[in-house]
Length: 181
Image 1 (tube, rainbow, N blue to C red):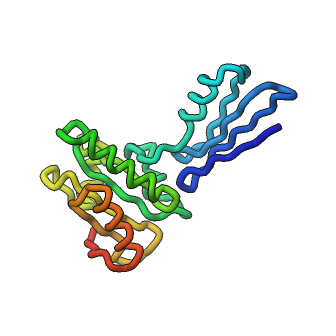
Image 2: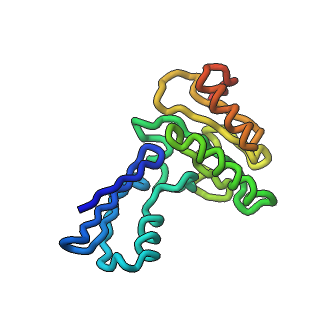
């Protein structure tokens, strides 16, 4: 048996291959906080196997939803989340997500990146906490849920890759201007 792991942002996917005995692949993943496992019998279908692995791999940017709530605000070993508040259907949204994804690739091992679509009714429940209005978007917030201190939230209107990186680095160094929730 061959077992390989892929760690993506603190969550691992395990791919177990047992070609000698069962010719199967099993994918175990904790995407969205729930372990997943699937078995496919035909490992010769490489595209199907890769598709299965991609389906359960944790993405760099997680669209916020009721199911993704725990990944954003309740994970003990990964407390820092970067939240992009924007309208997913607005002009420039695709480019913003691409740039946000680039920042996520650079920091995904220590930080969770979340798209907060302002048109999503579940997201709207959190806009009051962050004091975000539709006219404020796009805006990026960083929140550290692993601390009880009041200076655990920072924000920037600079939604470029370098602006997001600067927010993260300044926050880590204790130099970010923090905001009250």
